[in-house]
Image 1: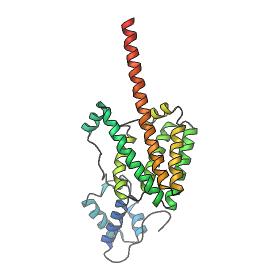
Image 2: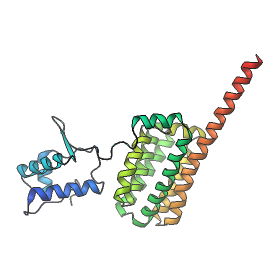
Image 3: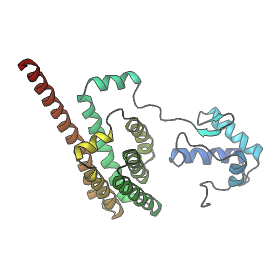
Image 4: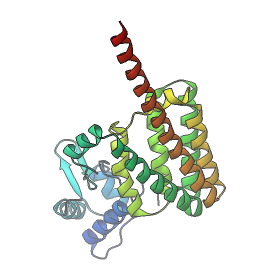
Length: 257
């Protein structure tokens, strides 16, 4: 496998089908993630070691199966396969009924702990290097007080942990959940940072998870992930209670004036 692309040369047997199978496998294994642009036709044919007509035949099969789509003038992209975890109507409902948010956190707690535990057991050397690099990026974002970079690094880290679990179902399910997080549907990380005071606690929690994975300690990784999600829940409960106190105080001031 080349260091510059993840594709393997194709042998001479049933060439187009072999191309389809390789790309399908890479989608299942979340190597090629939804929205990812494939290399140009020329570069992809060269990487796979096949003719461009055979490559076009394979891409047409993939497109017919709904796995890729072609944007004329832009290229070929992996299709959006996981869809939205919730419909717009249900998302709106969740925002009006705050307690449902804690069901989301409960789900996240179990899945994050599961992913961290598996990652501690299964992470490859490449997975570990990726995790270490993201922690460096998170540290830099925190030191520079760059909230946007912090949020992106946060999502990248959780995604990398899930990828290191090597569980393909978990990868695809959590990709949809993280998309909601990126959109700020359930909570905004900037709000968590205000509850934290500086974001330092969040950074340390992420380091604890990664350290346990790097050490190959599933129980500690599971515990660290749960502690992180518990912190998120406690922070929001504290914030909501503070907002309720402020509303009550405001009403009392209104009545006494």
